[in-house]
Length: 257
Length: 321
Image 1 (cartoon, helix red, strand yellow):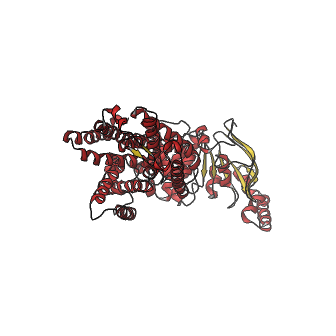
Image 2 (cartoon, rainbow over the protein chains, first blue to last red):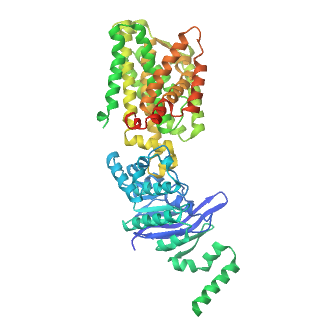
Image 3 (cartoon, helix red, strand yellow):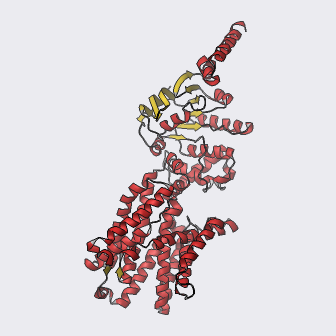
């Protein structure tokens, strides 16, 4: 596995709150890595630290061989690391096409306006927003805005895409469509690092999963291993007894069945 | 390419008409009317770069105009510079000042930025009112024989008129050029959501500083020309807060964020204002009207005249920038 993103010993504090404490992991090329954890575990903060929105208090972040620890977000994009937002941030009064053109213009290839428009149209086709290209971003549905987030990030022609809950708030049909898009992204050679609460989706999409709880890395591994980890179950359900019982149940099933 | 844009040619035709209408009729009062219209368009267009394009409300935009007037007048009369050179020097000097200023106050957002711009206006006015080389609160005068170099006062007035029309045309072309450029797209992204723009790769700090500086250039040049034409300058007329506010009214009236909107708003408002100011019934009533207009526009037509046209004829979006 060729390392694309290397996060080592990263911590981020807000006053007394340790949002992220000493988190390390490696993400390889062409990999889909999931990031899960209960609400408030520090997932989005970790994203913000990785793409430069926040500066970490400790630790380093390397991307494609370069130290990006203290780079501002706009420089991080030029290096090929794009992201979407959990709370969508469409450029409301601009058209869908213009939104995506911004991504292409100021992304990794820093395209001039005309070629950027072409890239934007291709990407809109890919995420299924081509017919809405001339509509204002404001008029999109929430599912449309999520796709727009993905399209804008893709237009930057990234090597790594950070997806922050792109499935949240979508209905089952829309989820299926978005999962198709994410698979397509990986197949085109882009690595994906995604936060998700829809377990079925993240379990089936991810090659590996990192679990955060109270800012700390709780587990890392293949989806099926992570799902059986008692610590992970505890973090999600909160009660060690329930976790213990569940573990017994699973183990019991494992030996008898 | 801007040359392929129909609006570019329309701007040239418009400026040519403005320039030659009073010349053909040899009508001096028409010229004096039109120079004020041109000035309104210059101020509104350049203010539009900040308010309409970038989303930063600048209440102190007039500071660039006033400072340009001071620098220009100082160079042209005390230092005996050629008028065009003095005006250009004023433009560049004030732009540099804006760049330095912008680095500081552009860290503020929303209402805080707007408040800071008012503070800057007051601070600059107080500074100039106590600055000896610029004549403190009495200001500076252009000695009558200074006009001799331009072939006498009559000639000088025509020359400054054409120069101001030229600056007006440049303001409109600048607005159009930025609007259809990649730089403009980055500014619009900042206007819509500055944090999103940063994450999409726009270097927001640099973009904002550049546009702030650019928006200072032509108003400063215009200031140098206008105050030279008027023959005098003092701190209260150079840094008139009301004119700053009226610039915002013009922009809202015409439609912020559009090239044509700034022109329409500037032109119409100036016409209305000069009517109100000169009519005996309404004299000094223009600010009441301005306030009322602003209220109506914000409440019922937030996109201004152009926004209203866009709503009725959606296809107009593609033609009118």
